[in-house]
Image (cartoon, rainbow, N blue to C red; front, side):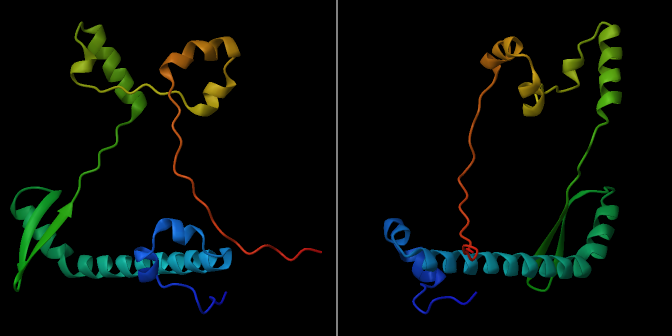
Length: 162
């Protein structure tokens, strides 16, 4: 898609009042949206490439520094010229829910409170909520709050009409 010649630049758009931007012709808005989508994809690709390069450059040194500190994860600081490189390898822990439920039951069976050790979050998937009989759904209503997300508008050229 070629952009109309009078499409404002991203800098122009950022400095333009929102009301003025909203009143622009739809083809200019579509051009801006396409330009932003392209810039977003380009930025994501460039970010991924730079992050890969930083990983190639520093991953081994960071792993050695972590080993020297006796840890497998976390943050280490490395010197490189006039810069301090902060290499963070976060820890992500997943728990097997069935096994954890059994452990919680064992703790409770021993007379202790599993809540001292285990956090529990109750939730009802929307699909299951909608499948409940109406009388049951009424009982769930006081515990249910519905929030809406942000409106997303995408402009696409209309297909040729026959």
